[in-house]
Length: 234
Image (cartoon, rainbow, N blue to C red):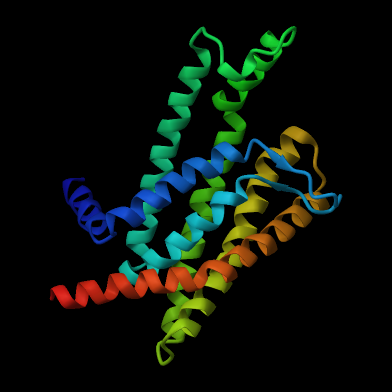
């Protein structure tokens, strides 16, 4: 156990602190904003506001995998999940503390709005369970698939190699993330059909991939900067 913990600490030290902080914050933000759905105007396109942060999470994992390897990125994902669960517990405790939210002061609706805000931040156990299982599964898929593709493309270099690794791993991992969550939560607790689960997972993965395509040049520059600094320090 001591050896495993020591290895865990050693691997985490390889991850740049700012990158780690950005990833952890994005995981917390992603799960909190997932409470709000997006009105896309299309019946077949189901999205939530968690997409604002989810691309940051997966791009961070891609950069970590590129610079530090899949094990370090996966351990960072486990740490992010643990801290997100801790934050979920803090939000739950806050939702149970007697008091009034500032936004609930609407004449005649104070109690309803206050309860709604408490429930939003307090969360439901099945949503937290579903999102946790989906995230850790998709993180492992993303990190090791990204690394595997990189090994197949070891003769290639530059942005093209980084982009192909990121695009393929992100799309497959995001599809898995959306599908697992839909099967655990949406199908069981909200009566979704399998068709709806697969459609939501696919359309969500496509949208996530678009974010990855737009911001992958930024991820590549960050990864190159990290690698250059390490090479200079040797």
